[in-house]
Length: 249
Ligand code: FPP
Image 1: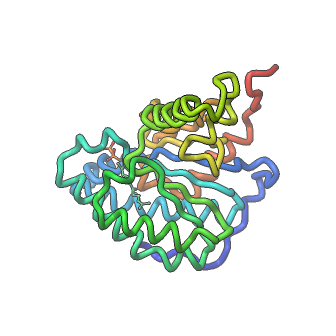
Image 2: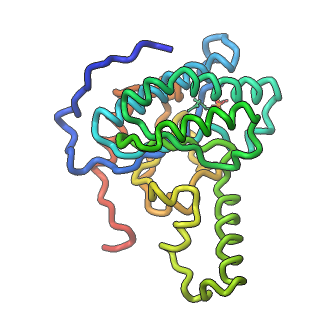
Image 3: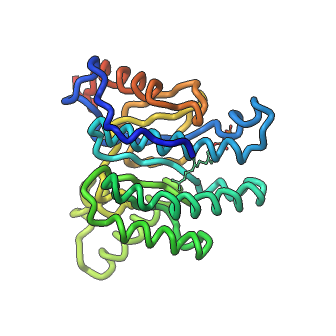
């Protein structure tokens, strides 16, 4: 992992501190292509992808963005060759072991969302530990979607709410958007203002389907391992030029 600068880096002067997104979400695409272009095995792309994510987390923290959510592994990603799946699971575990101390120093609060019970038990243990140890930190909220699927998340919320109705605890006409959101994994972080997807793909890929309803989308051709501060600066500049109307005129 590349050494990170320890000095807080200021927000570039052309960006408006008061109009930053509160919550940024990222679909980190293109690790495999990054590696292939260099004649390297795909796993090297994922390793560099971790560096890029760490850089973005640090940058968000420095620039005062309150929440970052990253799509690390989708429910569909189990369909990859099992060596790659195994590598990713081991990588996530190692990253958590290695980075916990630094996350504590930087006041990061980490949480994992998704169907975590299906993950290897040793990874679940590291997830549990990192979430417990960082739960009282009050810096950036870092959410990692792992074995996550947006449709599954919505179905799970429906089941929970249906069960409350069945038990007579709520009436069907009490179900509104605010209540529904409270049954999603992201109840504590709210909706992203900006979604960034790398490597030029124009898809949501089952990511935060409910939560992205009003997000601004930013798609860049850059491959994820190349997504650095300069790229993030471009994404924020584009975001700040948008007129967010939320369906109004
Ligand atoms: C997509 O690239 C990337 C992934 C499936 C893995 C992303 C995961 C990380 C960067 C690690 C995050 C870790 C923690 C614990 C926070 P791809 O393989 O789909 O690239 P391709 O489209 O070029 O093949």
